[in-house]
Image (cartoon, rainbow, N blue to C red; front, side, top):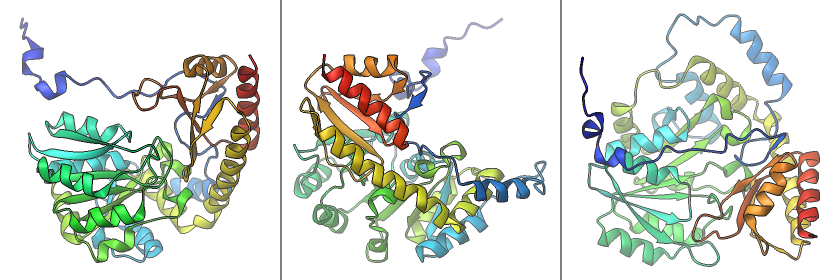
Length: 357
């Protein structure tokens, strides 16, 4: 019988990590995870149900996701050789760090931003240097480049629009960083569909740029489908470390149908954008709140009262939002995902009720 000291065998960079967690709290209305409030349109469901009947589930899926790549390439006017499919964008972030970084190397991220960049980097023994955003949630390109040069950084991660702040960074500053940084720029456009702003066309002029996209925010969160667009050489190197069959048959097929029938999903996206404006305007009427500009499917706001108390008031009344107030730069801040009109109305009503206390 063995009694091995397992902790000694675990890498130090892993031992010091805490598992990434999201709120697993049960709630009637979930406005915390930046998911779409809508399932895929019925027409897509019906098509998919028919295709399931012919699936050979005893066979492995296409290891290269060829048909899905063809659909994406057509929509984006690019080539299959410039695409990689991931089990969500998170997998592609992992693959990029595996390709371009060895243990002890450095990456740059703004702060605050999406937590997984630093978490995945730490799991691989890669160091993360933070560049704080200014009071407008933007960054200075020169400062970012100087920090990258000082730390001999291999990659810079920028999410556009930024999560959790919701805004798009200065286009001028992003272009400056892309053109002057002598490493890899990862532009995560997970929320592109709500901003309609993209740097994909810059890939033709800048071979160090990779743009990430996700289908999780527009109805396929459960399917875990993300993709990257980049110079063919970057894609080639990613494929060397990408596990075979990383995208399952069901995800590939549903994503393909969604891309090929995008006009159906666009109606849902337009609805969310309209509701985002209404929700923002209504929140701004509340004098106890500071509402930050957003081009995403969520809104960041700060309360003059207690964010913790407001969070639990909402939760008690069946509404789950994201409490970000433990972050040093997000004191008393909450983030709410744009839901359906009825969900948003419930949220607004409870925020108003709490504010009147």
